[in-house]
Amino acid sequence: MDIAKSSIRLEEDGTGMVELNIDIHGDDDVFMRLTEPDDAPWSWALYPPAFFLHGLRMPQGQEGAFAIGMPDTHAEADESGIYMMEYGDVSAVNIIELSARRLLVSGMVDLCGKRLPFHIDMPRT
Image 1 (cartoon, rainbow, N blue to C red):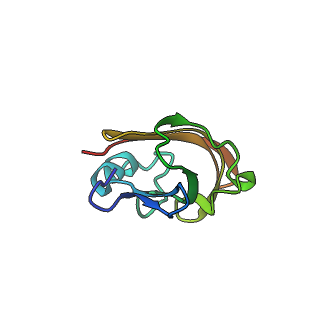
Image 2 (cartoon, one colour; image 1 turned 90 degrees about the horizontal axis):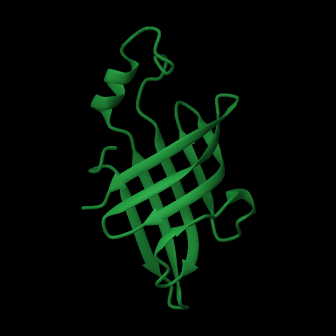
Image 3 (spheres, rainbow, N blue to C red; image 1 turned 90 degrees about the vertical axis):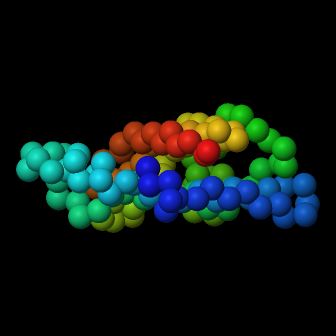
């Protein structure tokens, strides 16, 4: 993860709810090492992937791990996806764990015609 380019924002809306907005950008150096071999699975990609989850509303003070399931049917999530040379819809979020020390997100994404797992574990310090 490129922590300098990534962000996690929690914004109170005045109604007892907070809105979670996440933007995670892959690290250029790690991406280059992983895609350097011609036979690497993502060698055709030009830059690292980016994950976004915007507009997830939840009760203020909710901490720890929680699942939102299918973002399409979760009324509190405005948009989510992974960009890897094209936009891939996040088809399920199995877990979001948000604490003062880390962000953990895992689920499934529809990318390049396949349904693939994804996992993000990012320190927040």
